[in-house]
Image (cartoon, rainbow, N blue to C red; front, side):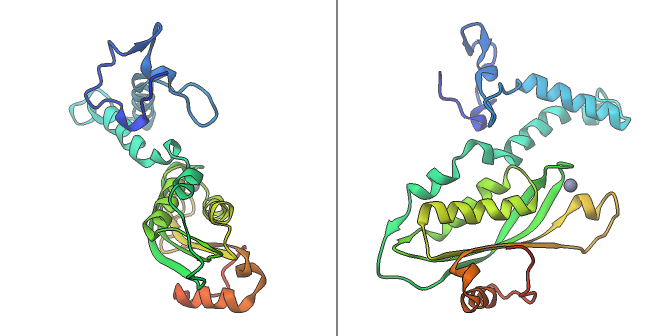
Length: 231
Ligand SMILES: [Zn+2]
């Protein structure tokens, strides 16, 4: 099977000639569940249907290019399905016994989409760990957050996935992840509560078991709400 990633599609790619067997190359791409991914044309048709459902005319001038733009935007919003977060950390950690103090990356810009309404979740993530021999560059921690954020998510799962992957790959003495974010499905529709943000946390190892470690982490991320919920 030719190796074509989701992001390559449409960039100088001739859909008429690129075929595998009798199927367009587009349709041999599979998604996370192993199911066939719909073609770009099918995705654009779905957007046109939603425009009509909303009450507008997908043929009018201003909307003519919208289905294609929405499909392109989805490629960016959901690029995280194309990346393996475990591989991201596994290939980049360094073995070092020299540093065993807490490492914290705070205020990582977070842009995700809620899986219930597919509208933005915007906020910040804070990630900390106590290394036990393995450390990873801070850019990789930010990338890890992004790989999980660029999927359809609920904030609780996103928080856990980031922490659990760091635990699995780096095997640190402890991990803490705190996310504070606003959900546009709450601020712009439904109960409409602008200004409300949700805080979730996942603490593993010494971050869970040792209150002094947890306090140190929360102080380092500058959390005024140190009693963050969940764990
Ligand atoms: Zn939602």
